[in-house]
Image 1 (tube, one colour):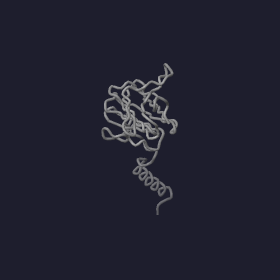
Image 2 (cartoon, rainbow, N blue to C red; image 1 turned 135 degrees about the vertical axis):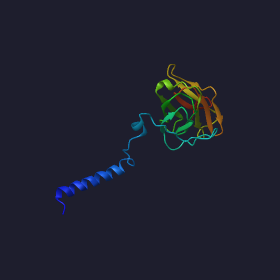
Image 3 (cartoon, rainbow, N blue to C red; image 1 turned 90 degrees about the horizontal axis):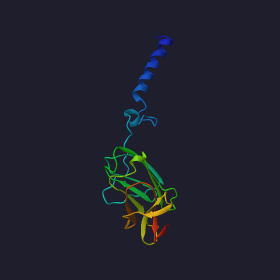
Image 4 (cartoon, one colour; image 1 turned 90 degrees about the vertical axis):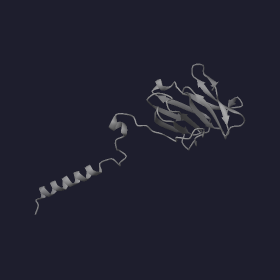
Length: 180
């Protein structure tokens, strides 16, 4: 017969073995790739074939850590942003936010800010099914407090698209004024 101390010691060893075998690899508290390797993980969201607009989805905000080596589409509300491979070097955190889904305004940001000057244009796509008339995209210039038309903005069926060289706040305009 085992003594009580020896029995508890064996039981403790068995429990430690089970905990070690299971670990926390399947739990929500598991370490991320960044915790293990020191590098930020690359998140790819809705990679689409060239020329196809993204489904805007139900959310009003999306955030992704993006690697410069991948073509990625991020969307929020009525807006999608297509980031081509090599638009910037390294990794960046990109946030796409439509603060009010009843208004055609989107806020685009990138961190670190030094990445906000793209080598290749990023494409902004807005769903325009709620708009009346001809649409275009404009961006808010905080230095002049005015909305400026985005050069190259063009309607494409039920969307309007524009190439972007930087992130800012953008909106859909219809017939020269703020849309829906």
